[in-house]
Image (cartoon, rainbow, N blue to C red; front, side, top):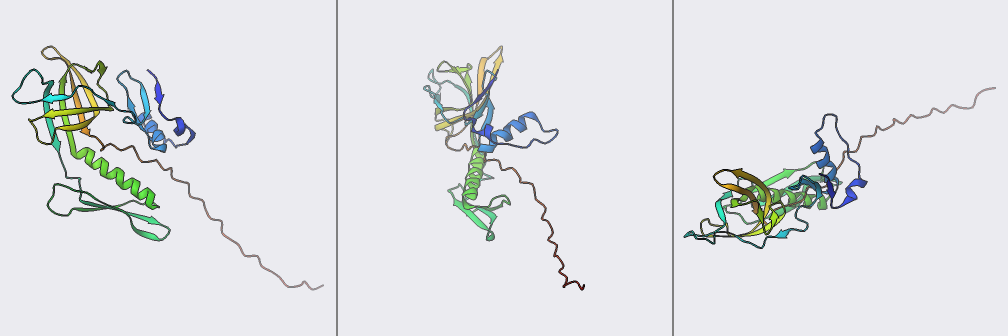
Length: 239
C-alpha cells in the first residue's frame, strides 16, 4: 500500500545498484547503509527500520498445559534446538594499520561439555569497534537460528490486533522443556481451512537474539597512482 520509514537518515546515503539486481535486494542494501531492516506489514506496507524498536507486548499468554483444559489457546507447539553454529568462544581476525591480528573475542555458555572455538576472518574490518559489532551480530544470528519455537494458534488476531512480526509474547507450557518464557514473533503465516477455520502459525525466537543488519560499507574505487617522472637537468648551454 505504501512505504513507512522509521528513520529517513538512510536516504542521505548513497548505495550502488548492480545491473540485474533484484529490487528487494537493492532496497535491503539501501536500508543497510545505516543498519536498518526491511519487512512487509500485514496490510502490505513496506517498512524500513527496526521491527523491535517499539515492540507490542501481547497481553494474552500462549498456553499449552497438560492435562488439557479450556485455558489452553495453543493448538500445536514444537521446539527447535540446533546448536551446530553455537560456539563457546569466537574470535574475529581482521586487519588494521598494524597488520592482521585478533580484533575481538567473546565467550558464552553452551550446552557442550567442552570448549568450542571458531575463528572468523573479515577482510573489511579495520577497527576494534567494527570487529565488536560484527562479532555481536554473528553471535546473535547464530542464536537466532539455533533456538526457536513454532506455535499454531486459533484465529488471525490477538488482543484485537492481527499477528505480526515485532510482537513479544509469554509462553506457558509443561509439554515442552525450555519453551516457557518470553518470545519474540519473527514471522507469522495466516491459514484458512474448512475443518480448522482461521489459524496462525507463529515463528517465535528468544527475546534479545534479534540484531539489526550491520551497516553496509560501500567499496571505494581504487585510485591509480600517478607515476612520478624525474626531470633531467642540463648544464649551462654553451653560447
